[in-house]
Length: 249
Image 1 (cartoon, rainbow, N blue to C red):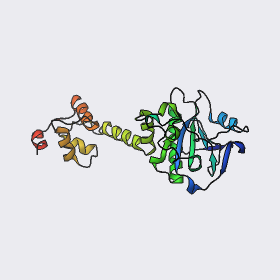
Image 2 (image 1 turned 90 degrees about the vertical axis):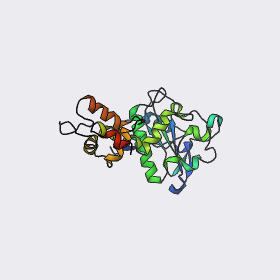
Image 3 (image 1 turned 120 degrees about the vertical axis):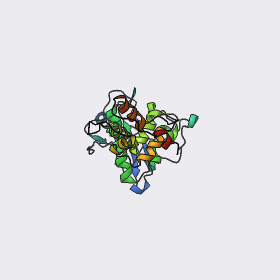
Image 4 (image 1 turned 180 degrees about the vertical axis):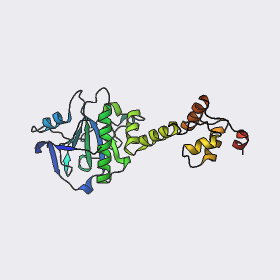
């Protein structure tokens, strides 16, 4: 679904001077720290004077992504210093207000709702493409100056953040598609005479290679093997003669 934007611009006292698109090197993900808030309400708050803070975009999973500060202006969002404990603040003085775009996720205190997650992924991809920002430079506020933001995604080896980073490069979709293709029903109700035949019906490029992996004595678990076991359990797959012999070659 294409992104839809709505402008509710912040008061000019809440953000800095101008910059060029070439100055943009980072995209920083934040959260507002509130439950039940909306992108529109946050934008309205920053329309008041002297808030001394700002962000370019607010996301709540609704119909619109709200734009609060022009991208060619400097938002006040990653200044100050909190901590470099536990790996925090590794981008301190590298990523600054002047060279970053800030995205605020709303309604994310207890968790990041799916709609907010999906919309933030879509917006981040859009910004990466438009301003030529690589995935390695999509970071958290925590990475910049150690602030606990976005709180559910801070710290090293954070599952939520790792999932988000995979999603912005499309790895999550590829994995889902791979699983769906593997477990999709074969059009013909007939039992497969061989694993090779099964693999061909699943459109694997190298049936023999996959056959050896599956038949190996210490084969790791995976979607291909799981699908084969499921098919065998249903009585739709017969083990061909000489399988182990071929696998040992």
